[in-house]
Length: 291
Image (cartoon, rainbow, N blue to C red):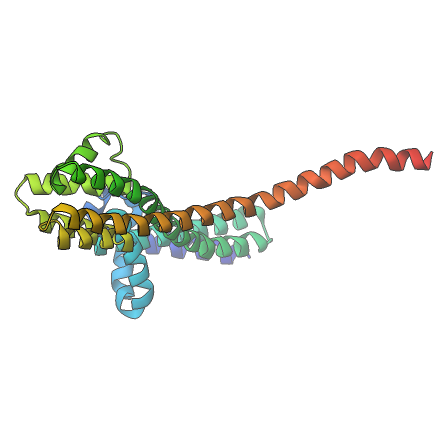
């Protein structure tokens, strides 16, 4: 067993060093790429070279597309393919390190193969958990956008009804949200404002928001604005009010789902609390009966 552990460690370490030597000149810039959740960019070049040699995007197109779609929603549409490869390299890096650690602990503990088997299990489980965590971040991002969009739309309707143009109404709303740039919706709206102030047309800037956010409700909002903002007047306000009603219903559905999830999470703690109370109340009664 010791020989097997030493062989596994030697193969993994030597393979990583060989990949690192060949990949360092080509993937040196990956250390400067930043994305939420990535922590191992410094050792990513060998895994990036391995992904290139394995042609993952061609051999597993469905899996690659799902990861890429989630990564693009988190990091933006630019360089989405590069960030996808970097995230896959992160998954492989965790698996690689866990395999080495499992083999090392198995070597230190002697003949027990359980540690190596457990390490191999974690080497598969951790990358799956990273992919699941990415999906959960995308779901949370979409949920935050859906919860915030109806309030923004209500403010725009009021300001447009008071006589402002759509651009002026959006700008006025953003002025009151200067500290909310971390919110995914407002981050893209601030970017949209900078774009139209630097020369982009309002139509191009709005379409860019819809494309980058990739949320159905935002696409409906952008489409409604672009179809009606030139008409102005009551027709435009009525169109936004109809959309606002739809978005509020969607927000109610999301809030209801969140409430149900919160209730389901409380079931186990409440059950444990009930059992503790039963023991606390029942134990003295049983002791008295025995006496």
